[in-house]
Length: 520
Image 1 (cartoon, rainbow, N blue to C red):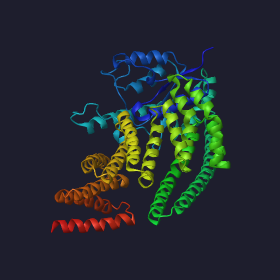
Image 2 (cartoon, rainbow, N blue to C red):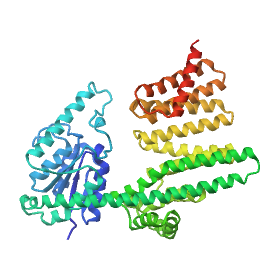
Image 3 (cartoon, rainbow, N blue to C red):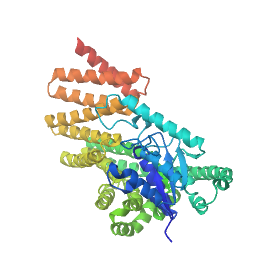
């Protein structure tokens, strides 16, 4: 007997990640799932393809979000003006298929924010605001129709709630041909169970995260003490101070990443994609600490890599789930200051999954950290090698997804670091080129979100770099102009009531003096 088959319906630009998560969950429950991600034909064939696929399925699940989505080139003769996503649900209902419409709540993490949805594909569109508003109204009308027809019964505000709803599907499918009212009688009990399950999941997740965070902090402190002891063994007081400063910087970076690493463990567990090895790693890390977690993964390392290498490209998502504990272990090695082990593990992971954004992002920050440490420990040539490695990764990431602001910021960081090392090597023209690219990206990010203090600070920092460099090159007017730009950005942050650190305020006063003197 064939496995039950479900069609997954959602607007891709808004909810592709959520749809993939639902597909993965259904697969673990013994169902096959199909969606628009599974075909490559042109739009001319799309409506008939959708009808064929819905006909072949036992039911349809639709994630109902804010986006209207793409629509056929002409009004559909059966359903009127509808998007492809709306057509999927309406056609399934007409074919007497079992359907579930799950409302995606306002707090649910989307692939694109609502303000960026349903914009015209043609950059020359005369009135994009009206274009977007018209499609938003069409989607709201569709939601109102679903409410009138009593289709909207569940709301998911995050991945955990969505998964709990989906995991109820085996019970629903067992009654696929029963009356809707029979299922409805169980709805109140389901909601109560869902609420209780959510509370238990959240409490267990919170306790695990606290234990993991405590072990990571302990490891960071142990690594810091060891590095400070190594610095104290240096005979020359100048080099001893340099090594101490490097150790302090490394510790600050480790501490800043502890929350990210803790959240990453919790996030994998919460998404329901954790393997048994990852679950065991999380448990060992929470109960026994970093060293035992690393020891456990080392015992599994060979078998994990072998399992991944033997899989075909069609199971890439599963591969990455298998590699997650290794990727997190690379970060644990970083936390312990074991750079060689971390570097080897990142290299081995990327040899298997060279296009995995999450692994590339981790390796990027590893190279940045190693470059920062190398500035006081080794030669400028080795510093540049690390920064160039980070830059190559950032360039790949932005090329794969130019709209991803996190990748854009990674690229700006790599340009800033390359500019710094070029200044140290006396290559002022190369430094100027790197700083201009740094400033260009910072300007784009700052303009895209004026409320993002971090991006605004990146912008004023880029102008400061250019100003310092211009002074080195005796370009007085250029330096003055960049100091003025830096002052305008930093004072703008202050005027909007956004957070400024004491160091920022001190620098703002210095900039004010520079701008004032330059104007005289």
